[in-house]
Image (tube, rainbow, N blue to C red):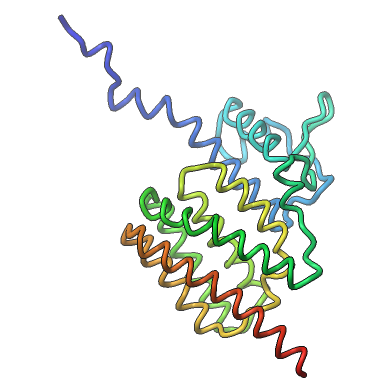
Length: 244
């Protein structure tokens, strides 16, 4: 009996998984545009057809991506009108939409990120693809350049991108969703306390190198050290300003 017709083949298996991966990639790209201010609250997204043409994907992929964005509280679809960017509409979004007016809030976010990103980077080291690794490396190199040139705003954007790319490399969309909400909260702060750029560059390089080696243990240790140091740098900056 010929059983080959009942088994997945090298040609058919990837085709069943591809739309889901494409939708995840599209979600990540639109989330990035929202987080970085390219798409602003209240703006209307392009039509499904326009998104299909722009990204070279099917209508099924676009609709799945829009559904995920709605679940994440990033967009709202109004029937007969279109899809619009929201501030944040989900419970998760409201939970993470914190005030950034005080140092206490900022420290609280850094502590929250310790619990989130230490595990995420371990998964990223185990699961990252060659393409994801290449994007991480490009981002770290760009970050080093901007830090060395003293371009804090550009460095801050690359720093945020680096952490989002790590979330994407986990292969778990919930890490991406939560990290995008966190980044929306800390966006105004990423360029405020960028002290000791040489140390920052070293910390990012250690994280990137561990992911490149697929060393999850070292990646977790490097991320923990980076976030703990970030908290210490912030406290030091605040103390210096109080004494000035």
